[in-house]
Image 1 (tube, rainbow, N blue to C red):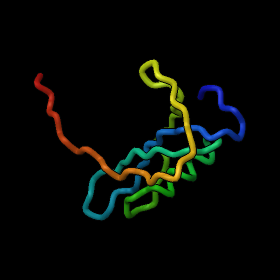
Image 2: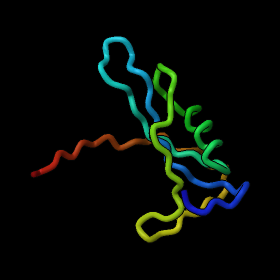
Image 3: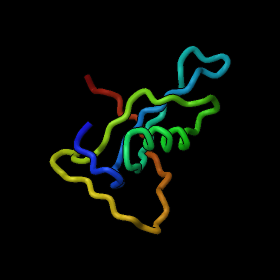
Image 4: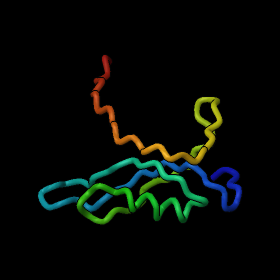
Length: 94
């Protein structure tokens, strides 16, 4: 999982799953972003961001250091996190 510098904050994308609620056939899923010093702490932090009604589990986790040729750098800030999500559906034209 890449070279982590011990104790340094790293960005992780975490794919969470939760048990199906009554009447549902499948789990709920959600992707959250967390900053943590290591994978174990990222797992804990991600479960704390779960918005589902059942207990969450981690299905997948990835440290994000470079995206499309751009290095990702973290900088502490007092600005609030955005909770905006674009849920525009773009069906395939195939």
